[in-house]
Image (cartoon, rainbow, N blue to C red; front, side, top):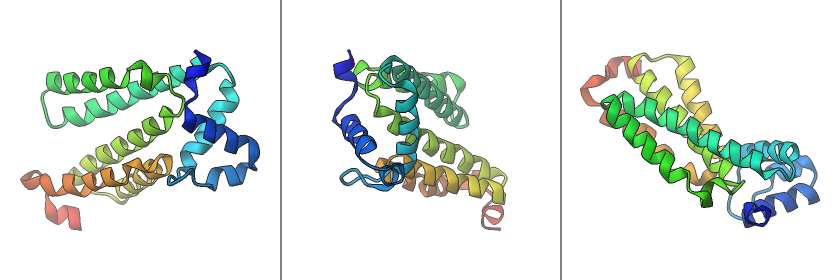
Length: 177
């Protein structure tokens, strides 16, 4: 299936990788998208995997598993473990479709979602025990999420919405201190 693994986004990145110096490859936008952190990771993955696309498929599957685990951890904080597990498994089933897992460029979406989920989990911890380190963690995860793929820009609005909807379970004086 080598002809089906690299989609047009992959070919564009591969052409940019081959035609441009490394630094320019990282900072040049791809159309309307700018995601230098993902391009850095993608460059390393392509150099390591080469034509062995099965390694990239394995990495996509492992990334899906990591994101499902992060999603489960977040859901478990709000719902019963059985429901949290069921919702996480629904994510895995929807992300395990061969049209998704067999595309190398999908890794950017996985990384972006993973950092977003990390920011969401740290936000939840921050609401219950505020600290400067957790605030830096939220900012770092949010920034890496955007630098991995910018489809998450609007999704980051979920972080303040999550804070606003926590209601009485949050000590607002501690939060704003």
